[in-house]
Image 1 (cartoon, rainbow, N blue to C red):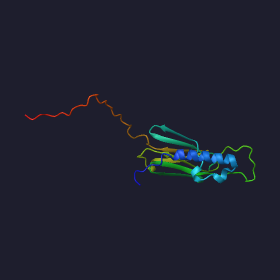
Image 2: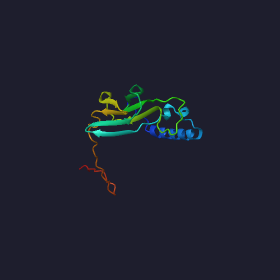
Image 3: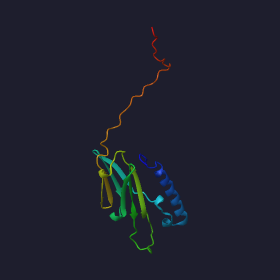
Image 4: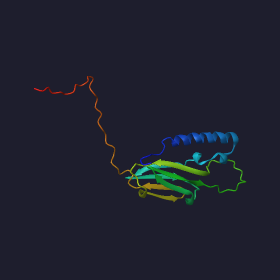
Amino acid sequence: MPGSRPNIFDGVTDYFTELTRMRTVGMHGSADAERTHASAWVPVTDIFAVGDDLVIRVELAGVNPDDVALSFGRGALAISGTRRRDLDEDVEFHTQERFYGEFRRLITLPEDTRADQVSSVLDRGLLEITVQGALAQDAAQLIEVVERSQEPSAPAVRAEE
């Protein structure tokens, strides 16, 4: 559908889904059984400007480049993939703080962004995505707000002579 935008409530939905998953894991002790694409972990992300370019850095330590996918459409960049366990199944953890399995992140970009402006490099566990010229569009213009007088103004009517 042309002009449609991503659901602005996706982040809120993901947040509550993750809270529910964590509660279930705390009660039943099974992290993997509950994890689905809808409740995938969200990697830590920094978004900043360098000149007119928008730069997005995503922490993906331990993720193979073949397990990362970027897609662009409807004004949003989707970052998804999988962090695979590198240990045998019979390992007994004393502490486990890293997330494994599917991850995803959806980032809204300026409306006129094109796919050919987007490039990415994964280096030492840090995915850097550059959106060239994303911030080069005209800055928003301020529009003056004028207060209407207390008395309603009468329309200007000229009497015919």
